[in-house]
Length: 100
Image (cartoon, rainbow, N blue to C red):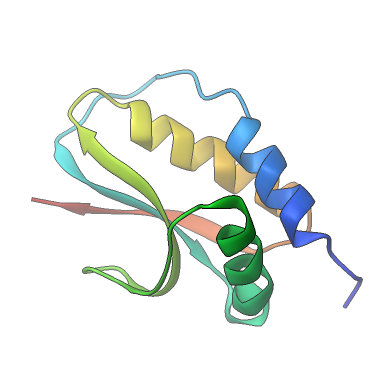
């Protein structure tokens, strides 16, 4: 596995533009990280002050908490943008939503 600069990858993911294209119901938005990369992302999240959850409410293990989408689509868009950037850096992940 090639060496990944997790802090640079997460910084880029947080800075990615996230245009709102979809508005949906209310709920929590997470970026779920592949098991092989959780330790690196957790350390980067801690260094950057980003909320990393070992176990996310209703979603599973190894998640970056994007935020609570209040039917405005902002957090959904942010999660999708983060996933694209992290994947481009070689970190398998996906967006997950837990509705209320």
